[in-house]
Every structure is written in C-alpha cells, then in structure tokens.
Image 1 (cartoon, helix red, strand yellow):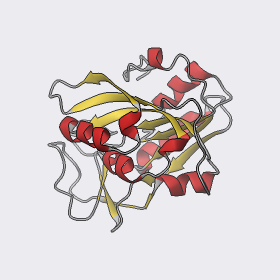
Image 2 (tube, rainbow, N blue to C red; image 1 turned 90 degrees about the vertical axis):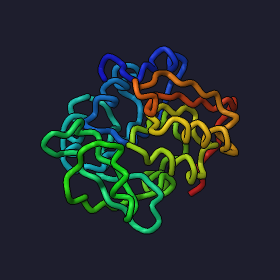
Image 3 (tube, helix red, strand yellow; image 1 turned 30 degrees about the horizontal axis):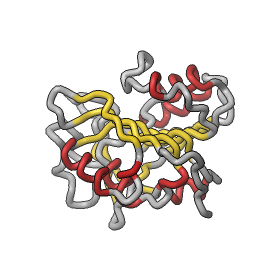
Image 4 (tube, one colour; image 1 turned 30 degrees about the vertical axis):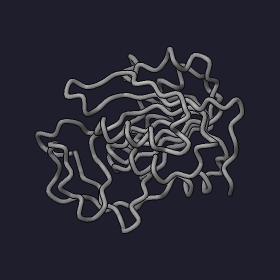
Length: 219
C-alpha cells in the first residue's frame, strides 16, 4: 500500500484535495499515503466498519501529525432492510481487510473467501447522511475499497455532482462496468481501469469528474 498498490499517484498529480473521504480505510495505510502526497492540511475522514481495524486506524492516524483527521467507526452502504458484516478475521482467512457489508439473506455471497461462522451486527449510514453529519459539502477525493458496497454506493448516492475524483477497487468487473456505463452521471466522467487481478473479477479504477467546477452537497 505504501508503495502505491492502487497505482494512482501519477493520475493525482494535479489534484490538491481539501477533503478526502476514505470508505474502507482498514488500518490507515491509504491515509498515510495521502498524508505524504498532499501534506498536513487536508481534511481526512477514514471510515472503517470492522471494530479491530477501526481501533488500529484510530491509533495510526493520530501519529501522522495531520489535522484535521478523523477515524470513524461506521459502514457506508444502502441496505434499507438492515445490514450484517461478514467477518474476515478468521483462522485461515485471506485478509483482515476483507470483511464486507451484506443485507440479511446475502450471507452466502462470500466470493469464495473464508469468513467467521457468525456475522457481526452492523449499523450503516448512507454517504449523504455521513456528509451531513460531518458538515462535508464537497469531496475532492473519494476512495471506495469496501468489498462490494461500491455497487450500492454508485447506484444510490445522490451527490456525485459534489465529488471531484474517485479511486477504488471494484468487485465483479462486468457488472461494475455495466453499472458505470448506465449511470446517468458517472457515464460522462473519465473512467480509467488502473489494474486488474489475475482472475479479472477484481480491479482498481479511477473516475474523474470532467466538470470544471464541482457542486455542493445540500444539507
């Protein structure tokens, strides 16, 4: 991660973000990378849904000498009938950052990854609700590495006009690309696939708002 595993630095050279929202912040490696790139004056919001990861995120971002910086114990999603967190902290697990938010009845959607037998309770907020609560009116850099929740965020978030750049990891390439092409706003943004996993179902993407001036989120 600290060696830019998202492969985005060259694409962000002209970006001078005032606000960064990091959904799926894990333990803070992307936060540290942004601190090194953009300096100490950025308003950073790291959002992490797993309690163990969040505790490390909270401790780590305190060390960066970066203010204002905030670590939020939360999940961003649009599961209207409740949500569960599939827990990737399990013996034989593949990643501590692999926990994912699912709606009740979707516990079987594991993509072959091992999860704990019992999911964790999870309270979600929409991205609009989070921004309203934190007084965020524009997002200069939005990172989405949230193990599938990116699909629901793309479908339901109503504030894309107030976002400048999105970088993240998609899950399910064909469904993801179809979703972006059909989106009434994002279809006009500049889309770049930065890398792709060997199985071609997971990859890193960059979305750039081509409008000269971005709008404001309404409270």
